Amino acid sequence: MLMRELSDDISVGDSFARALRKHPQQFDDLFCNMVEVGESSGTLATILERLSNHKEQSERLKVRIKKALTYPCIVLLVAVLVTAVLLTKVVPGFAQTFGEFGADLPGITLFVLELSEIFQRLWLYLVAACISCCGGFLLVKKRSLRISRLADRIVPRLPIVGKLTRNLILARFSRTLATTFTAGQPILDALKATATTVNNSFYTEIIQIIRQDLAHGVSLYRAVGKQPAFPAALQQMINVGEESGSLGQILDRAGRLYERDVELSLDTIIPLIEPVMMLVLGLLVGGLLLAMYLPIFQLGHII
Image (cartoon, rainbow, N blue to C red; front, side, top):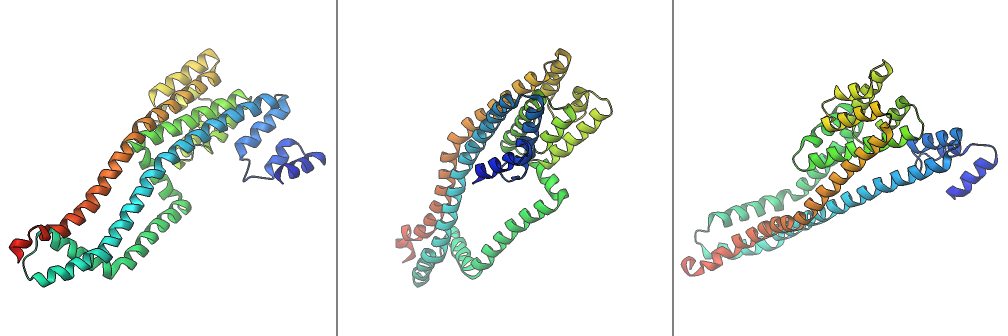
């Protein structure tokens, strides 16, 4: 269907880029701008190949990150469901049995019994509160530029996840700027397109500031050097690229380096996720079961 619509638009006289712009959900501004540059310069085939490589690498990283996040999310969900079942179905049965003993129970058992009573009374409110908080945060982040910028500024500074996020943003910045600049777009237009692809409002604002500095005659190296969010290594690579006239190639190499750092981080984190999550699940469920069976272990003293 999409291909037929593109073919119909081109057959009536629209350019390829103009036909693509009618489908913003499938083709973003970066893709359309690159195609437009390729049509005007007669290098459409080369640019489409670069776009294909750029998209392929970006999607590959997205898939790896989603895969790394899926497992812990599932384990956490299972842990929450198992805990809820234990607190609402299993613990009350033990509570009735312990009540017949008429003896003092261990502190951990009393804590779990009290927690079970609270959860049974308030579980509906707790679920509603969690959903409301998560939904409210996402809604506020989406509609409030200030909150979105604050969250996007904090996440790259977090331990472990922050380094991964920061390298991913720098990889997108370097790769996209290299792709657009090498394709023949002016540096100001290339930065404008790059700002929309980093998926971080804080870095987007920084790139817009860099773009304004370039418009006033400042070199890219000096403009980037004013922003602490960009590491010194990337600044030096940009400086070398500008002085040697190979900015596109240098930025592409920087993008590959940051992508490799992201993959190395994922290779380190993913093998650790399974044992850590299993440990958390074991401590949570095992702690509840221990609290319930501890009085039975001491049955001789209780009776």
